[in-house]
Length: 172
Image 1: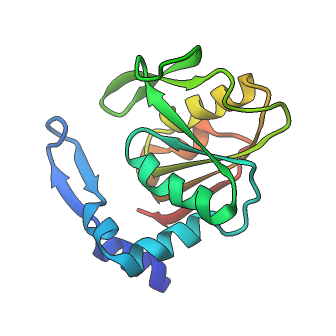
Image 2 (image 1 turned 45 degrees about the horizontal axis):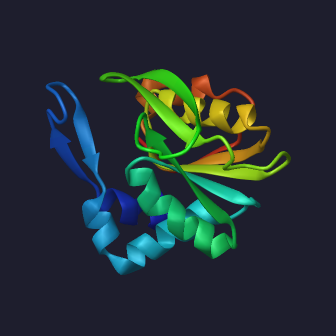
């Protein structure tokens, strides 16, 4: 196990039965509070990708994607839950491990040919990431990859992202 993986795992708190019974929530707030660990995570998510824009998926994805965009000199694009963006949007619905949801992005967020890195905190069932990939592609941009802090391998989310480069800093 790498030093980065150890650092991450030591600073993520499991919260059982949240947001509903049977789900173990991965709380990243202790990791975010540690400046050195947070810096290492941002570097790990950004390394090796070239992008014009970085997508952050609401809500925790915003926290890690915005500094990745800043580090890479790229624009930041929020992908939000339905009804949260003020202008014309593209939307995509998906299933996740404890329900279903719809995400949206402004329809003018990307230019044709933009290379877009999608960043989120956790890859679980892959529904959210797959929906974000679809939104980027429908907007005429190219998906450079998906980078996540943690992948829950037992939920097989990677299988919903064929042909997409995925970087997971930790796989559990």
